[in-house]
Image (spheres, rainbow, N blue to C red):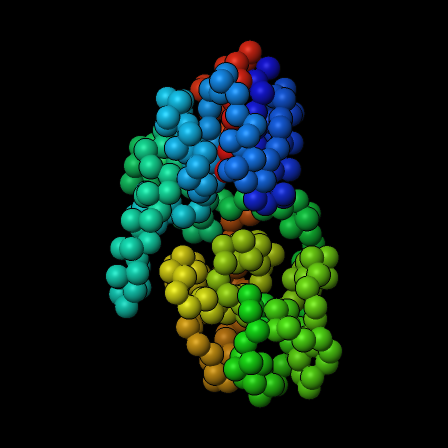
Length: 302
């Protein structure tokens, strides 16, 4: 039996990985960041698994043990993809950072919501890792559009007030019904329920929310956070796949155009692949068996 340290800042990811590893007979220890992982290291470590966390990767290299990377960012470096022309400079800089974060991994397990050709022999493409509550959810289209921003956006609030559509909004730093917009305070359970029953999403373009929404069949109007090219990349490919639209700033006409095209986006989303986490977790278990055979100690850090 291998002893595996699973380190990830998302508890849902740690839980998913823990379940598959324990079912395969491995003993699992959890940590939430690289510093906790370093504190938990033992000289017997045989394997490092990281999800875009550089400290654990460098520790693995220094100890001359295999490194396995699990993340979505390496889609920009290890997969044959295109980028928006107006962001070519940002793309080049981001790709350089991605290469520096987890350099020379033995294996890259890349998650993506679209299919593309892998360019490197040690890279494997998988569907996004989803929390169990999303995998078990039974989505139903309601009347409200879910809006989420990472910081208060008064300009967007003014735009929403001009559109003839009910919205439920998170992240604006306010509560209560204001015209056609119901503002809510942060709530994991409340947000999940609103996501499940939303008829569409208007939000920033973080990978987790984008992939959860697409899995639930929700058309997505993406507004990337300024200065975050990874979000631009997600939004660009979301629009390219026909699952929604992408603008770096919104006005009434753009929101209404998105709402008008909801039937088209829903038709495309009907064919969206929904495979769950099993393929990636099976591959991970195979790699652990290869790099940290039974009776030796492994570390999974992310």
